Length: 447
Ligand code: MG
Image (cartoon, rainbow, N blue to C red; front, top):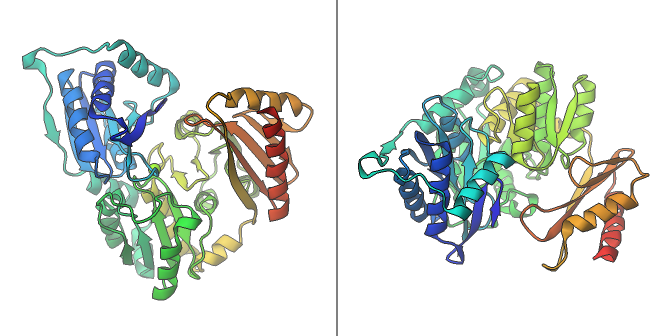
C-alpha cells in the first residue's frame, strides 16, 4: 500500500525487497545526491529491508548515514541536521510484527508533504532514477551518537529540569513491546534518575501483544504497576512516537490524556497556540481556553499537524493517539519529549498522576469504523453525508465533523484502507455511543 508518507505491506506478501529498492532509488534521485539518514525499528524484517534501501540510495549517488536501530523521532532529529539531505525510516509503526514499511522524511526532518510524496510515486511508476557511474556510487557512513544526542536534546529543553526530576526518584514500569524503545529508554530513564522496571525490553521485533499502545493492549503493564507500587506506567509503540500512560492505581488513562497532560503543563509555562488534528479530544480546547490559547485543528496525519505547528510557531502540538509534538525539540511525534514533559509536570506538581488526570475534564471517546466492500467508494459516502448535514454545525477540515455542545462526531474515509472511521466524544458513554450509532445507520444506508 502506497501513501503520501511512503509504502507499507506484509513482508513475504506484497512488501518485497525490490519495492524498498525502487522507493529508495526514487527517494535518492529526488533529494540527493547527499547524505541520507537511514534508521529502523526492531522488526525481524528490518535488516533485510535495510540492505535494499542502502543499495537503492548508494546506486543513485547518495551516502547512507547509518544510525542502526533507533526510534522514528531519533531518525528525524538526525535528518534535520544541516549536513544531511533526507531520511528514510524502516518501520511499520504500531502495525503487527509481520508488517514493515518505509516512512519517508523531507530534508527538514518532517514527513513528506503530498507534493513530495507524489513526486516519489511518479518516479517509481516511471522508473525514473539518476543512476551513478561506478566511481560515484555512495558509501555507508556509520553514525554512532544518534541516541545520545536525542537524550541530550530532551534533557536540555528549557522546560525540563533534570535535577528536579532526579530528586523525585520516580518508580516507573515501562513496556517497550520489544520495539525500538529498548534502544533509548533505559539510558533516558537512567539519566533522569528513575527506578524503572522494564517489560518486553529486548528489541527483538517479536511483539508479545498487539503493539498499538491502546488500553486493551496494556493489561500486563497495568498489573505490573500495581504489583510494584509504581508512580506511573508507560507504554510506547514499536517506533516510539506514541506514548500511553497508566496511573499509580494501575488504570490506563486512555491515550488521549497523554497529549492533554503534556499540553496542560506546557500552557501553564508558555503562551502560544496549540495545533492538533480534527479527531483529538476537546480536553485540549478546555485547557487552551483556561490559558487564553488558540487551538488550530488540521486533517488527521502527522505531517498536517507538524507543518501547521511550524507555520504558526505553535508552543504545543500533537495527535490525540498519544503523539506528542513538542516544537521546542522538533516538529515530530516524540515519546521521549512526552516522557520528559510528563515527569517534569509530576515533579513540579507534587501530586499523583491520577490527580493530575482527574483535574482535567473527563469525556468518553469511542473510535469505531465501518469496513466497506472494495467496490464502494468511501469518499463518496462521506460526501453524501456532508450534503445531508449541511444545515448542522459542521467542520469540514477532514471529512465531516458534526459539533454539538460538549460533544462531537467525526466521520472520514481512511487514506490507506477501504474503511470509514467514525470517532465521537461526549460527556457520557450513552451519548457518545448514540452519536456513533446515528451516523453509522446513515452511512450504511448509503452503501
Ligand atoms: Mg509509531
